[in-house]
Structure formats: structure tokens, C-alpha cells
Image 1 (cartoon, rainbow, N blue to C red):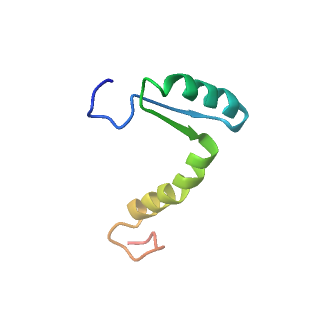
Image 2: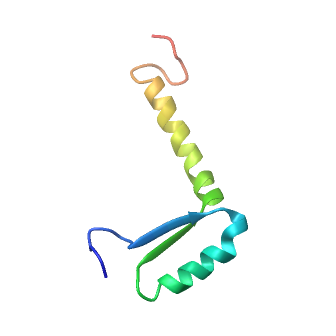
Length: 70
């Protein structure tokens, strides 16, 4: 319906306690828009390891793994 440069027209995330509301909102929007709904807890769980890996890589760039000394 909108710009084809994006995978979704509307993307939103919610806390577990708001899952019923998020589902209702998605049901109302999805017939006319491309939607993506994400549970915040699941997003956090999926991205924690990746974020930690990026931090370790930045701190240890050019050094032996797990060593912060030059």
C-alpha cells in the first residue's frame, strides 16, 4: 500500500501483558497494511548474545580473544 522500499508498512512491539491488545491491533491493520508484531521479551532474548558479541569484538579488536591488554 505504501513504499515498497520497506518490508512492512507498520511494525510494533509490545510487552507480554499487552499481547491481547497487540493481537487485536494487528488484526485490524493487517487486512490493509503489511504488519510486523514482535514481543519485546523475545526480541531482547534474541539480540542479547549478538549485542554482547559486538561489544567484545570492539573491545578486543586486534587483540587475542578475551584479553583487554595490548
